[in-house]
Amino acid sequence: MVGSILPLRLLIPNAKRLTLTAAVMAVIASPVLAATGAPADARGQVYVTAPPMNRTVETRLLPQMAVLLDKLMVEKREMTLDGVKVFDADDKFLPGKVAIGVAYLLIDTPRDDPKFKLYLEGYRQIAEMTVDDTNNTWGVYYYCQALHMLQEAGLLEQAVSPQTLAKLKVKLDWRRFVGADDLALIDLPNNYYGVAFSVARLRYQLGWEDASASEALLGRTLDHYRKYSGEYGFADETDGEGRFDRYSVLLIGEISHRLIEAGMPATPEVKAWLRKSVDLMLPRLNERGEGFEYGRSIGTYGETAFLEVLTAAAKLDVLTPEEKVMAYAFSSRVTARYVDFWFDPKMGSVNLWEHGRRTDDYRGKHRILGENLSLARQHIYTNAIWNELGFKEQAPDAGYAAWLDTLPKRTLTWFARGEHDRLVVTLRDGKRVIALPIINGGKSQHENSPYYPIPFSPGLLAGVADGEFPQLLPRITLADGARLTPLAYASHVEVVEKGAKTIVTYDQSQLDKLGTDVPIADDRFSVRTTYVLEPGKISRTDVFTPKGSRAVSAVDLAFGSFSSAPASKGGATTFGKGDVRGFKVRGLTCKSRPLKNEKAYRTPTGAFASLTECSSGAATVSAPLTVSWSLSYR
Image 1 (tube, rainbow, N blue to C red):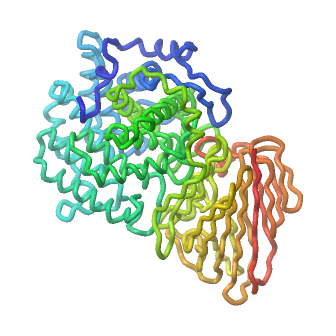
Image 2: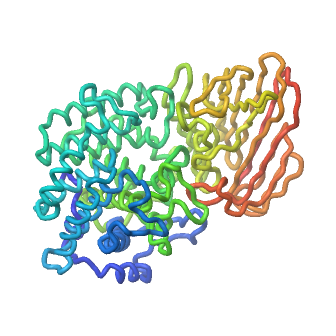
Image 3: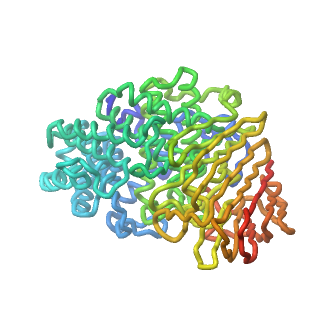
C-alpha cells in the first residue's frame, strides 16, 4: 500500500500476534535482541552496533504498544496509566490517537484469531464512547487516517456503526481549525496547514468530499511555507517574527510524508526544502540516536523529527546512496534508543516526565496515553518505509561510526538575515555535537532557556523546558525592577574561522525586557557579544553599553550542569565528576551547590546535578560593562 500508512499485518508478514505480555517479557530477557554498545550512562547508551530497525519495531515496540491497547480494551474510559486517568486528563488529541492505535491492533489480528471479534466489538464501543469527546487538529488527522486504514482493510463498516460514522463525518473536518472562506489558520502555528491538507485529502479518500479543498489547502500550505521560509528554506514558526526551532526543520518533513500518504508527487521545490533540512541534520548524527538539542518539544520528539525528515528524504530520493545507508543506520539507533532509554517498563509507558525528566507543558503527563500512541506510530510508519526501500531486517552499516568522522567539523545554517539575524552554528568536537542557535523571537518562547542564544550539546549543555533562569546568559536587573537580557534582537552576526577556533560576534541595539509573553525592546542598554568555540573550550564575552547613566540592582547569570561535586571560589568553579571540567566567570562572584532532582532544573533527558549562580552588587553604570565566562569540557 504505497502512499499510505501500512497496517501491521503487512509490516510483519507470516507472523501471528504473540501473547503480548509474554512477548514483552521475552524481549526483556533476550540478549539477542539488544544492541551492542558501550555501557549506558544518564544519556543512554552508545550504539556501537544496533539491531535492524524492523526487528526492534516488531519484537519490542509493537508488543509494548499492544499491551497498552489491550489494557484500553478492558478498562475503556476508566483506564489509568502510571496514575493518570487518561480520559479525564484533557488530552485534546486523544480520541484520534486511540482510533489509529486500535486500528493497527485490529488490522494486525488474524481474522481466525478469537481476539479478532473482541477487538472489532471493542473498536465499535470505543468509537461510540469517544465520539462526543474533544478531538482537535492532530486528533482529527489521526482519526481520519484510522478510518481510511479500516476502509482499505475492508473493516470500516464492521468497526464503526453507521450512527457513529455519521457523527464522525461532521466532526472530523478541517474547517474546525481553518477558515473555509479564506483558508486562514484559526489561532494555530504554521505547521497546522499540513494537518489541514491531510485531513482534507483523507476526507476525499473516504468519499466525504471532492479533491478541491485538499488541493487548495496544499497550495496554501506551500505558499505559506514559501512566504515564511524566505530565501533560506526554513519555516518561521511565527508570522515573520523570527523563531526557528525543531518545527522549522521538521515541517517540510511532515509535508513530505503527507504527500507520500496521499500518493501525490513532491515538487522539485519541496525536495529542495527537504534537502535543506537534511543538510542541517546530517552534521548532528551520532551513535546514540540523539536528536535536536535546542527549542521546544525535543527529547524523544527531537529524535523522531530526525527520523521523519530522513525517512521522507530517503523515500523521495533526496539522499545520496551513501547518505541513505547512513540515515537508516541512524534511524535504527533512534528506534533502539526509544525502547531502551525512553520507555520505562516500571511505568508501562514512555517517560517524558519522571525521574528527573521534564518536557513542555504542552506535552504534560495528562497526555501520557496519547504520547505513547503517537510516538509508536512515528516509529511504525517510518519503519514501514525503510522496509519498502529494501532495508527490512538489514543490519545497520558497520562503517557508520567511521562515516560520522567524515562529517564537517563546522556548519553554518542561516534561517533569516535582515533587521535581525537568525542562524545556528553546528560544531563536531570529536564525538560531541555542539550547537549555537541564535533563533529567539516571537511570542511565548522568548524567555524560555531552550531558546536562549547559548551553546547546547547533548549530555553537556541544555535548557529547561518552559523554564526561565539565566542559563549562561547575563541578566541585568535595573533599580526600577526591570530585568533585561540579550535575547531577541541579534544583528550584524559574523562567523569567522581561525584554525580550530570558531568566532561568532553579533550586536543587539536593544535588550529584551522580561515579564510578558512577547519580547519588549528596551534600549537602556545595548550589547556586543563574542563567542569563541574551540576543541574542549567555549567562551562568551558581553560588553553592555548603557544609554546614559543607569542604576543597576544586580547582574547575574547561572550554569545548570550535568556535572557534579562543584566547588566555587571567586568566579571559578570546578567539578569533581562529569564532562565539564571548569566554569570561570569574570565580572561576577559565583557560588555553587549540588542539585537533587529539583523540578526547576530538570531537562528532557534528566535533571541537572549542580547549579552555579553568579552575581554582582548594585552599582550606577555609566561606562561599558563587561561580563564573560569560559567553560572547559572533556
